[in-house]
Length: 367
Image (cartoon, rainbow, N blue to C red; front, side, top):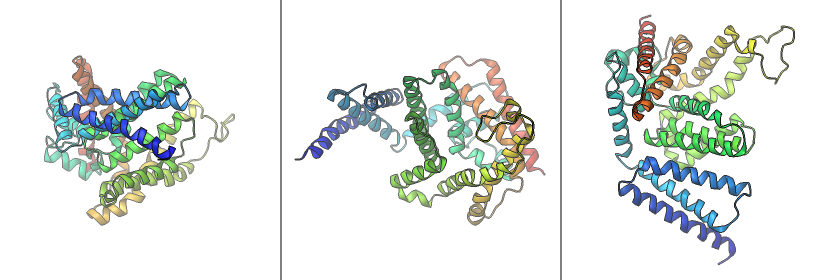
């Protein structure tokens, strides 16, 4: 047996042992959601230390490989039939116990965070469909993207040192992966997770994040993992929307006239505060983003469903920013309620934001 084969054997055995341990622990009733993040953090931190030359011993390498196998075994148990259903059932029970002032708020919070629309009234579903906001209800990469931005903002307090970047990487990728698996790993959710994984890995290694490289890398990885997913409409729409954002949006955004004021920043320089607060520019960029997505997804939606959202531009300009607010408040309310100390004012704010979104979509649908 040559040295390369011996190396593979030496690594495969601890990995298999870790995977077996993960499966056994989950089968014995151990806390998968407690152990999986810990094993992932240990794997990520050990990998960073090995890559930077901080650890060179054989036990450290074997320990990292064992933790990687343990993490895979624990996460694999989450994808077993009925596992994510039970997980989301516990989240639904938690949401149902939150004392929202409006009866319809809990149902929409449940739909946005778990994808379960069973508590939504037919009128609410019709309002979303007729206003062109059905994609907001479908648990997708949009929702994981909003949660990722929340986590990214929270982890910014870690700083920019090498250990802080490593901790931030493990935190963002680990929690995003757990959310993707716990919610059923739909094609668009997996796409969003792969985007996060590749983007954060590039940042950790100090490399420039190239959107098209991330797009192509995620597409390839997802098809390698499951080639049959290419038949999924959610997969097709998700990647078409991202292709529009990466290819069409930069062109449309550039149509807005550049600032001609004295002292305007040069190309590539950080924009001034007055430019970032330029309301007409922000409105145009939001409209350009919506148009970019619709240009590539609308033909497929028409072929598959025979529909086209007439008010997609109005919906995206008004409802999407409000949806982000609703998601942030909903996630904060659910997490703090799970910890047992959610303030009453946060529940009220969450309720007001949800009801405002519903009234807005009902108004657009009635046009």
